[in-house]
Image 1 (cartoon, helix red, strand yellow):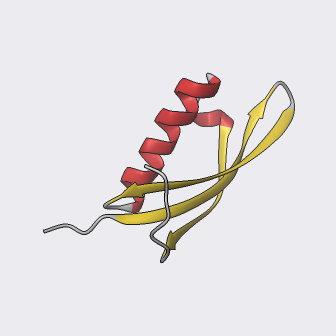
Image 2: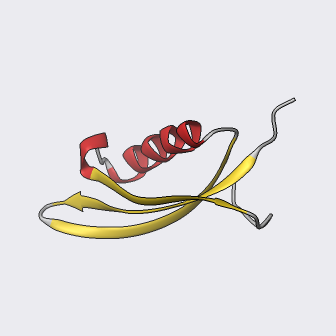
Length: 68
């Protein structure tokens, strides 16, 4: 059985020549799944394409208090 982990992802959205920093906690089984969920979420909320999103760090969190 797969164990769901919480990933803390930090980065910036590059829109209109500005950097909009963000940090988000996402629950996923693998790091790649967490990144795909992040790209999907930011794309739908901010109309940001994948090349506009710059990821600076991805860490596996040990805390249990993450938003789904």
